[in-house]
Image (cartoon, rainbow, N blue to C red; front, side, top):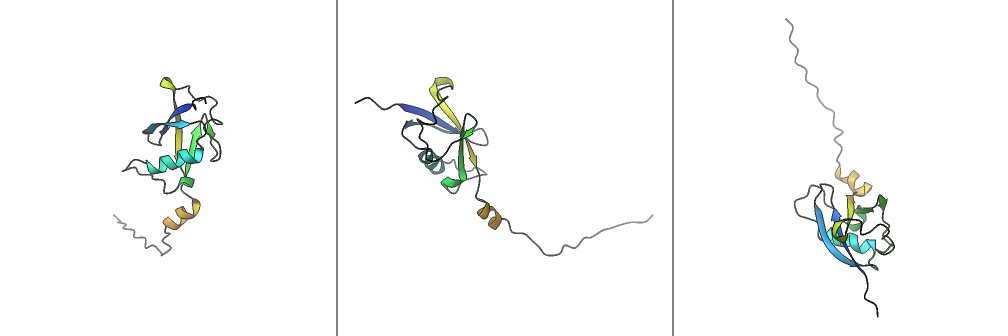
Length: 118
């Protein structure tokens, strides 16, 4: 039985920091990668994904689909030095959560103007 090919992947966050690298098989799905990202998200970041569906992975300028495998997404994998593939991570909170978190203050505002006449 041939040994399954392993791919080293690290995930570049919005601030330039990285998670990983981690080693994955070619049969690992993009969804599995996202689960790892959410579980290993660094503490103290301003933006934190609360669920896997808030994470988008980008490789070679393409957003990767959850049901695709690392093997299917592999086309220019391995271009990085040392054979480590870098995927960019975008956190996009769901629209419903964002609206709920933003509380709009509809109360009238009092405008105070202090003018002086000379």
